[in-house]
Amino acid sequence: MSDLATAARLRQATSQFPAHWYCDPRVFHAERTHLFARSPVPRDTSGTR
Amino acid sequence: MTPEPGDYHVLAARDNGQALVHGPQGIELLSNICRHRQAIMLTGRGNARNIVCPIHRWTYDLSGKLLGAPHFDDQPCAQLGRTPLQNWHGLLFDGPRDVARDLAGLTLKDIDFTGYVLNRVDLHPCNYNWKTFIEVYLEDYHVEPFHPGLGQFVTCNDLRWEFAERASVQSVGVNSGLAKPGTRAYERWHKAVLDYYGGQQPAQGAIWLTYYPNIMVEWYPHVLVISTLVPQAVDRTLNVVEFYYPEDIALFEPEFVEAEQAAYHETAKEDDEIAERMDAGRKALYAQGRSEVGPYQSPMEDGMQHFHEFYRREMEVHLAGL
Image 1 (cartoon, chains in turn purple, green):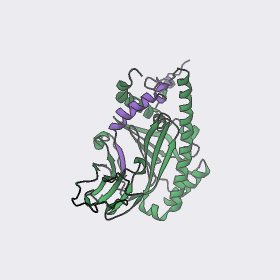
Image 2 (cartoon, one colour):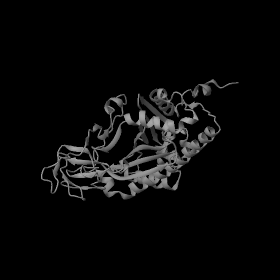
Image 3 (tube, each protein chain N blue to C red):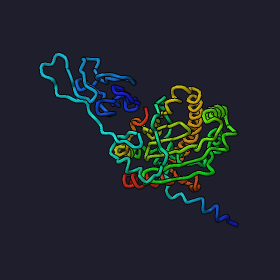
Image 4 (cartoon, rainbow over the protein chains, first blue to last red):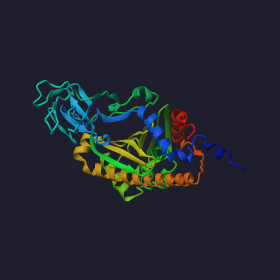
């Protein structure tokens, strides 16, 4: 008998990345160009010392 | 980092090419590269009246304006580059994003960084992909089986998630009044916390904010840790880790600071092993020309799924055909 409550918690992995997104240098370079070039960068905590 | 006028802090993670400088207009992010022969000028941290290049003595004021260039009849018109900063709850950011807008959807009440002081900056090299780091950070499923210390410090039984378009927050409680430390390092940390709190349990175990794609802000009892990932290659990532504490702790409670950092490093080492195993498995699949995916456990892996969805929104169009 299937456990529907458990099955509901195990969502399908529709969003997980394929293996080559972690290994392909072309993906890495695309990330540098399109993701990190437009990202915020933390620089210090002004309220802190 | 730079509380007093004249204070400066050179950013090692940016190849020392920029420095935070507390000048007449407050804290500014200035280029640390001389306009004459492009030498690095300031090093480390300190306090100065002016910024002076040691090679030819070109001298700039603390807003970056060139004051003097020895033996030039006509003063060169040169100024150090300045990068605008944004302030969010006392944290300073640069970059093109509107930070306040990005994080506006998060409630994050009771945040107050006032009086916290920088204690230490670690440059932690990670031998795995930056996305793997974020994935490990954004799931609590592994905490109990893989972190004997952290898993007895916090409890994920009351895990709460909050999501914004480019960020998520996970909050977890204190585990059983810190009564059962799981490792030697955490035993020391439990004791330091309980001693500081007079034997009482802190109100929270941990709050972990992830600002996608690569910034993590962590609050533990009287501890603030900011981590920034710098991707260096597909399988190399530099994690810049900054430790802050309330001033009284930073100055007068060395045992609290040392115990906290020892526990933190123990957990970080365990996370390294998790990430290295995940990357190794994916490399093996990649070498075989294969790929596999698995399901998300909810709620413990909700943050990982949220990050995956963010990344796909941002990147899928650029990865088409790869």
